[in-house]
Amino acid sequence: MAGYLDQYGAGEERREKIVKRSLISLAALVVIGGSLFFIFHNYREEHQVKQFFDRLASHDYKAAYSLFGCTDEKPCRDYPFDKFMDDWGPRSGRNDTSNFRIFRSRTCGSGVILTVDFGKSQEEKLWVERKDMVIGFSPFPGCPAGM
Image (cartoon, rainbow, N blue to C red; front, top):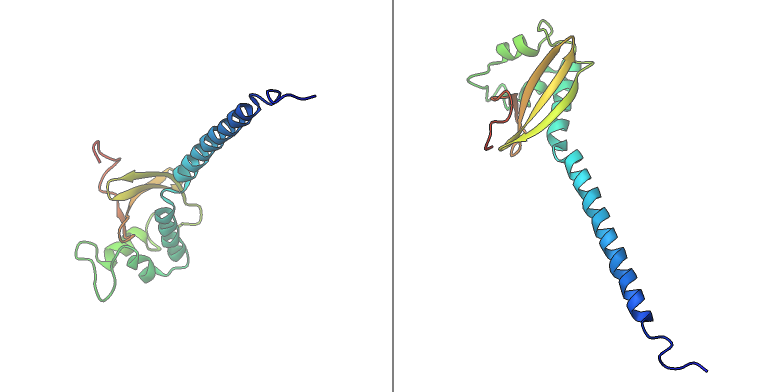
């Protein structure tokens, strides 16, 4: 014959299991979420730079120039198209974009500094402004303290 106290404490054990599983699930969610944030935080900016190099590889220099925020209708005062071609055109030292890779991506203030390796000990630091995705040369060698 079972007494009413035979099940005493069974609810407490179940509650402890639920709390333990909830805490483990929450910890796993935080670790996975943090990892995904770290990996994909600068994804849009990295994708923009990859598009830039795709356009250079297909010799669509006007389209690549437009990613710098410059067009024929609205040329950049401090970066005219002929200077862009000196930097990125077929006669530049960076004309082989087939083996470029982004090996560093750092958030810095309102933008992202992307360090691009071209092979042959050549690298360039590019800046992508977050609000409008305009590419430019990084104004900083690294991110200054406080940004």
